[in-house]
Amino acid sequence: MPEPGSERARLHRDFAPRRARVVAVVIGALALLGGLVLAFVLPDIGPLDRLGFLGIGALVAAFMARQAMVAVHVDEQGLAVRNLFLSRRLEWAEVVEVRFGGGQPWLQLDLSDGDVLPVMAVQRADGAAAEAEAQRLATLVALHGPRDRG
Image (tube, rainbow, N blue to C red; front, side, top):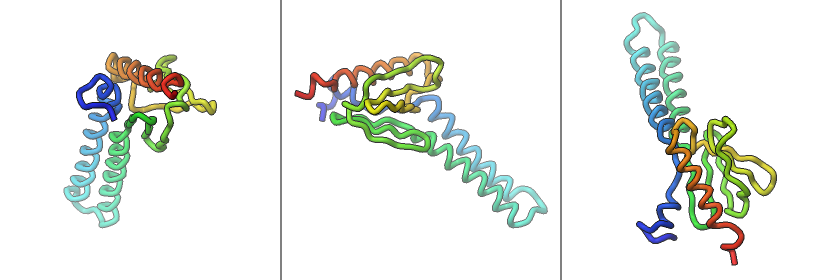
């Protein structure tokens, strides 16, 4: 494990989107609040309608919570990518290239098995911060490249 406060430790901190996380939390809270308000404020609706409003608010909030949890956790052995629906653990040797361009909304990893893995934790919407994060991930891939495996 890298020494806390070291350059290596700063490189190995987790990746997470900035704007998407804030937007997801706000929308989720508003959806839940909206479902509650509609379920208990609207007059003359039946119990199933109330449950429907609560259920839709809860579903939207759950989806937004999952969006807010998108992240990449890194350590000396590899990285764990948690996207909206799928999560995948990779060893550093499996990552061939880090790409962040071509109009894609988020970073992509080219993998040794030929797959391309989107990384929703680094999103174009974050602008220059996303570019810096993409560069940091590329640096980590280079750092843990084959020459480091002695």
